[in-house]
Image 1 (tube, rainbow, N blue to C red):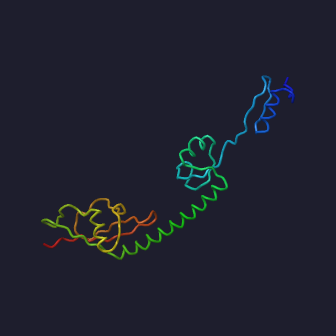
Image 2: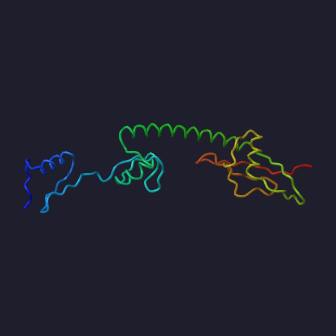
Image 3: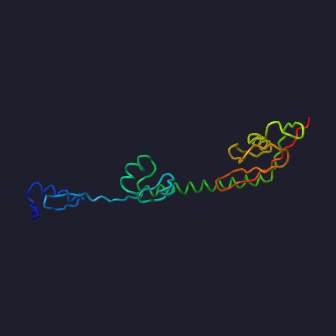
Length: 190
């Protein structure tokens, strides 16, 4: 019923040669059927955050096709070899050190911001109404005059300030840190 494997037969020689390279051979009524042994899942190191797979630097198992056809060509992952794991650990340590320094700088700036109130003078009309409004750019300029260096995109200002008086403005200094800046809007003396 099954064909006997004869080492002198040409097909048998090819079959035995293929067995050396990790293939499976099934013998059926219809002849030989060769199926290659391939590992279905492979491990990769993510080089950027992915909502379904995980965060940057994690080692995850994904299907071979997804890794070889999508993740690796688009530089979203690298194969998890010993050398790439070691390089990624060194990169992670450097990134964590840099992140800790940035957080320390942001904490120092937050303390300085809380101790430094800012005053913005504006033109007003009848009844104390402002001509225009106090915008983020005005607050950044007033803070720079007081020695506090800020960027306009750091200010969290839902809407421009349109009233005289004391206001508190949130400032995003770091992903994990916000500070409150006291802004007083005063009438310009004529």
